[in-house]
Image (tube, rainbow, N blue to C red; front, side, top):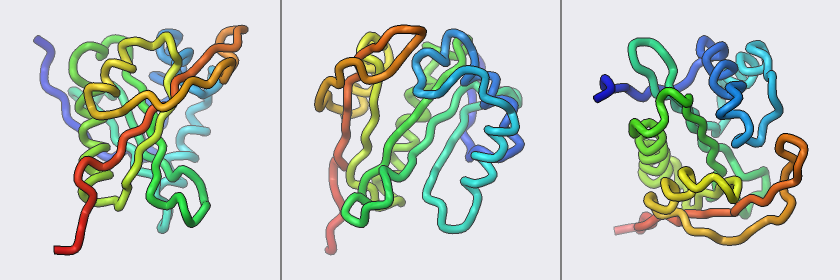
Length: 175
């Protein structure tokens, strides 16, 4: 059984680990990012996330100081009428997959969205052939809302993605 891991907020000091995991040949094809992102690009994004007023919330899982994966909630856009919506992105290092890392990250993000961030709806896209991720998302209350045909270029081929969403299970009310 693998050692336990912990979750914490990502910082600019984690840039090299983000670049390592998200550029991994077993991880990168399932992300909407281009290969070979630089450490500096990650450092800048993580630095930007720390600016006052930014709504990004990025967590990472680590064991013995080694990053195992990350996940984040991001505003769906700037439209006033969509402030209640966040998009979700997640990546887990191949050596940490199947150890509960993705589930722990997703549960922490859903808890944050439901209890602290005034988020009613979380949206994500997932490649239609990523069955493992789809099972995880469904187990956490995400529902298949549509299929986007030829949505993204992946390794030289246009491939489909599923659009999935999750609504807050018990939206806050005034007592």
